[in-house]
Image (cartoon, rainbow, N blue to C red; front, side):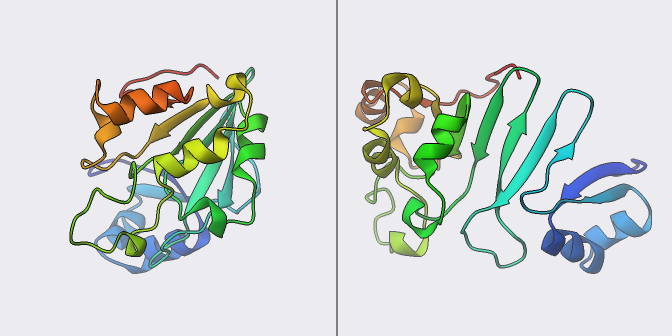
Length: 186
């Protein structure tokens, strides 16, 4: 954002405060390079005449800021976007119901299973494993499972690479790994 003027930066309250009070980001605010636009959980913001977003809180490591997912709503479609979250069981929402309410769901797929980081306690890096998500979504209709596209894959995740048994298992389960540059019209 160097050299920009009033670039809109949408942020939740804790992140807004962090940007205002911690350098070097605070300098961007002071010099008016960025214009902070506050977001509030569960309050819809209209970005333009066609697109609106609704942030919602999700459980995750919140050392500096809130962690949120988004409903992204266009004239024809509604997208569920949850790139980073702890285990589904730690949340007071039904991810299955949210998938059903969406037209497309981009969900945290950081790790395929708990065997990717030898020598590390995976419980200290909480994310829903793809294998856990596939099991949760197995009871959904085929048309609902097809909405699920996993994102935020760690470089150790075997489903990241085409042709691997992990990727094939995701496909057999009726779900997908999102592709870089993928477009889904709203």
